[in-house]
Image (tube, rainbow, N blue to C red):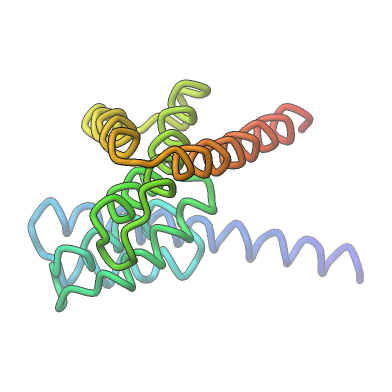
Length: 178
């Protein structure tokens, strides 16, 4: 009986992952066709199933007001969830939001840390690489934030970046031990 429950739980998780992938793909196809309402619906479904890519893409739509009125605060919440799930592109989006005060108060040390974390994730693992435009945005964001910070803010930014990078190392170690 216990084994049957485990098998059923695993099957349900597998089906959930497949559903999230197909929902993500439907969202991507809709976005290519500029059908923002359909993209939003599909990515909401995939995000609800835990797909970090869908969370980030849905956040992009919310921030730009595509398929719905703009919701910068909702976008930041989704980027944060996607970043916490390990998606480097969400770190770039959070860095930009922190640098420009989009959906959150302007926070130069946080922007610096998010950008550095995305660059480090890309450097550490091609699997986690952000695309070239995001990598360029992250590199430019590091420079922009660093150039505007006070010494105290720079120390805080370095500390936050080091914490984020330590989490990446911890995730790498966890993955390597599997």
